[in-house]
Length: 184
Image (cartoon, rainbow, N blue to C red):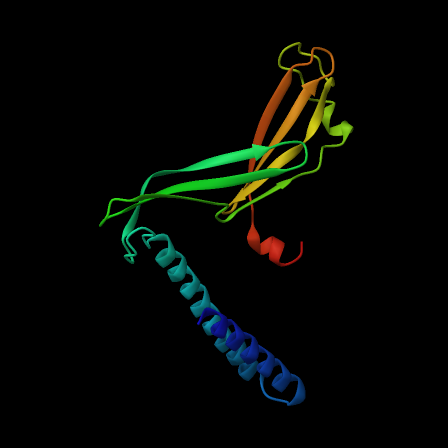
């Protein structure tokens, strides 16, 4: 159903665009067509959400639908090395009928990547927390970047070239999705 609604959305928007380009209809017809194409898209997203919930609450042992409830808090496991950064979310679900506890892992809706190291000029003002040397800190590994909702968290790995002290710093920023959508 979800795929059919997405195809319907594409068909309506293409039909409206082609009709707008070939004829001299007023702008309201074009706006009405684009708005009408959004309805199937919204329905498709809603169906996907319902399907995910149905799949999460299905008991794999006894086969009952809408039987499982999430217990406890999800556990986040981060794995970072020089070339890769991944984040896995582990959730525990318990069936109301048979008592089976099921553990499920997945990335959820969390985007992770390795970022780019800062140029040396940006590191000149950083002071080593151990020996107090200024400008002696270097990044020794690419930063880890994760996006959860509208927040981007960047973890950087620093090392002092004098004393060898390693330091990890995290910064958090709010992402404005509308700016990214406009191509800025």
